[in-house]
Length: 109
Image 1 (tube, rainbow, N blue to C red):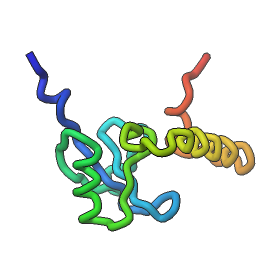
Image 2 (cartoon, one colour):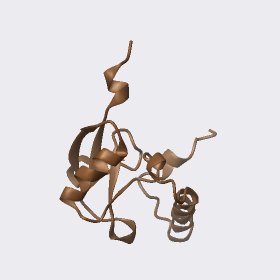
Image 3 (tube, helix red, strand yellow):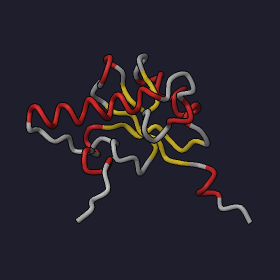
């Protein structure tokens, strides 16, 4: 039997633009998902592509998250690791730890 919750996911878009002034679309459960007051619920969709179509209604410069919707980024999967490396460098040089930083690593303690 097919579980309908496995076919569809809830999607959100960040209100504040991020890298390259894009508003990122996230699947529910993404560690990079903005807090409730900093995101807009887009709806329930079967794919990130459908959520992106809805997201462009809110913000023309919308893009799928490269972490939770990496399947929508066929052109350059290496960019995800570049973005993570940038976050590591930011943390090392500034001492500021992004909210999602802990979600990228497994604790060995």
